[in-house]
Length: 527
Ligand code: XUL
Image (cartoon, rainbow, N blue to C red; front, side, top):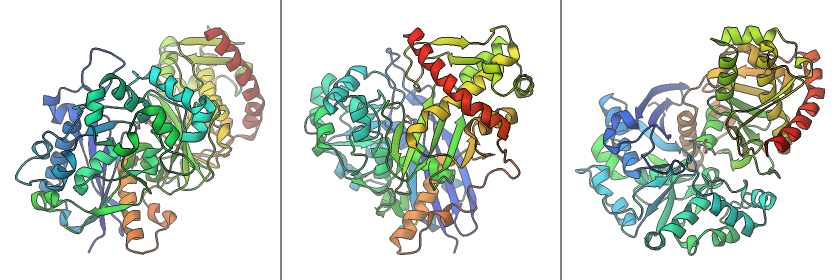
């Protein structure tokens, strides 16, 4: 019999299901359901509920539950061998929170398969909507919690990150301050990940260390709730949070609801879920220190595995826990493809080939020309308002400006990842802009590291399926080595390796110092 594992991924806009055949090292099912299109009655736009305040971003836990029903119905219709699934795990957008009342536990334990999940969940929420990671309405709460924890560096050192608007602690504090009665009626607070895992398990389940690290509430080293952080956030919070646990924790077998309704294997084990970034770490195969991924999308992210816990004293980067039990780091830039696109527009670039030609016609190091491309307020470094700054760079020189933006983005990653004290030995490039080979050469030269392209569009869902396999192996007392688990699932594109050019790498070793100086000046000019 095949060894099948199911990984689900609840992202901002969609719910995806990936089934892997573990022995054959193959993804045998891969489908997604878009919330706006499949569930228009919730009236979300890109998965977010409309709100008059542009800083407030919420979604609907009921919509997510309805999506879970639909994705299982789809798998049944598509004849997925649900009866053979050995274990199920999941990945979810990080930081978002779901608020349950004292009816929730009994409702979860008694799901009636003759009714929908939505009907079964009637009356269990103490707050009908869930704040999600895009929300930025909690600046005041961030400042309050940060102050109680001793400032930026101390907060990062204690919880893995400085306080951020989207993080769960500040969100919980805001809820407590603005709706104290509803907060008092809340018996259980779940993350998006633990809420979805609770639906599958038919009971309230723990939060895994990976997603727990995105709350400003967990001690990043001890991996338990920090009393000072809980107290800085809201009263009685310790009574409302579930326990924390390892990412491979089996919580039990799947709720009979899914067995009766969709024919899921009654012995299928359910695991805790984790955040999408931790799941992507294993979905991309970044299972040892030195393996890094750079995702070049609307925003750019740099993330990788880290053995020993180190935190960012400037509070720009994040430390979460990897599903392997090691740590993972993440830095996220707002001015990714957005900024590349703006420069492209300004100089009449129509496609990647044009951009590649432009970049190649200026020399590595750009004769010392530097650009700080903050078309939007930036996270790394922290920049509160947009600002474009040029140093020794003629605005009229199209080639130099095209090279300058790519060099700036890569030098910023090199500079602002130094706190991790992990020199990358292999970088996987993903995301739309990773098709541009000239850009990847700049990446290899600036980072002085080989770069390989990896094309895994569903890295989070695949990571969740691999976590299901890992948890099942651990639980069955079998050998569960991550190298063996990911082998064959996460290979880079063949022949895609780009090696650094030693001459160019030497240029950037010096230029990065000038870049750091220019960044300091630009921050002052921008203040
Ligand atoms: C990470 C973050 C996002 C969400 C997206 O800190 O906020 O990557 O996890 O789903």
